[in-house]
Image (cartoon, rainbow, N blue to C red; front, side):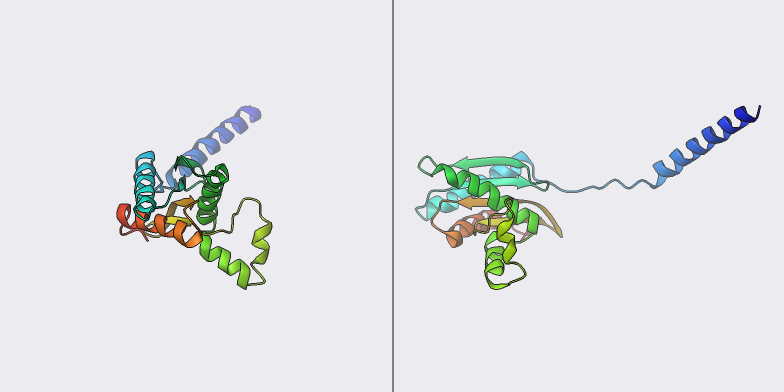
Length: 166
């Protein structure tokens, strides 16, 4: 009888806890990069590079750092494909442009060890994608002719596709 009462008490406690938990559970709702958005950004990025007579590769990652989409011009070296992805990941991870992060690492002794993290690539061309106060992903560009030019192609695309974002 005592065992049965204990079992019923535990069952009641479990049911009560479950309903309390279900009522107070917080589910995060976050905006993220869709494939359609990634493709729009890539098309605009490549168009911006081409308008300046440049070829490039561009990659878009989502808020989790996963590759969503990538475009590469025919004559761009294969190392640039990896660089574009890593620039995008770096920008997402640090919520800043990879060019600014690179400058900080060169000028700030406390940040110079960022070079030792294999996941980060401290070269310009990565730009976070912001919607409101959230970073929903990032775009990385490589092979267009230098950090400033790579970043410029990305910024032009973001201004066109997400005009209120950055």
